[in-house]
Length: 110
Image 1 (cartoon, rainbow, N blue to C red):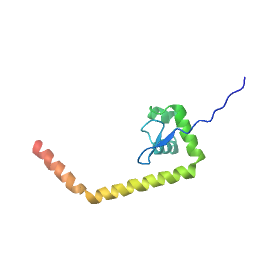
Image 2 (cartoon, rainbow, N blue to C red; image 1 turned 90 degrees about the vertical axis):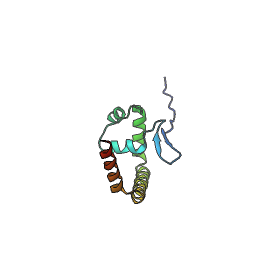
Image 3 (cartoon, one colour; image 1 turned 180 degrees about the vertical axis):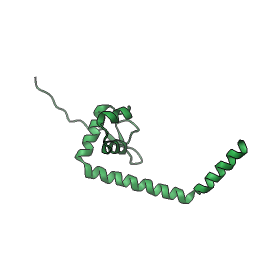
Image 4 (cartoon, helix red, strand yellow; image 1 turned 60 degrees about the vertical axis):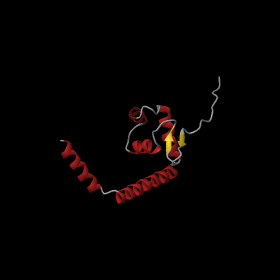
């Protein structure tokens, strides 16, 4: 008996915001890659994110290992976007002002 080998698509999909998600889950490529880079095994990652089956974790890690420079560029662009959003929000919203208002509200209700 011979083994029929079929090519399977990589289980990654980009959502409308350009965020790459793993399979049909809300788990991002970033999450799996960072966990792997921190030394977690595929089994540990699958246990930590039960929505992602072990085989899909292995496929995602395989994709990362095969396309490291492309994935690293994507991760850097995501980090840059997150930083930009954080800076924009901090300039729009006075964090010390929010803290003072919340503390005042707590004192009134308590």
